[in-house]
Length: 52
Image (cartoon, rainbow, N blue to C red):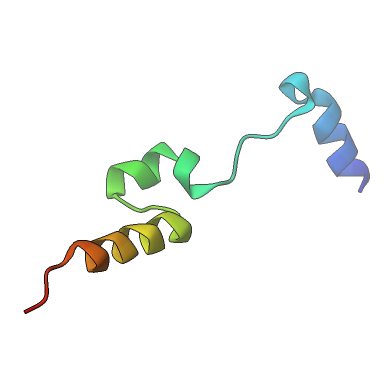
């Protein structure tokens, strides 16, 4: 806990970088999205798909 507090004090503005997938440039380059975004995309594709 002490190391966490020290790290928090010495961080710029006391903040950590975002750990979300949608904020990562490397993930964006690979085309990897958040599971919520992927689910939304799949649901929209199924809804727009015309069935005979």
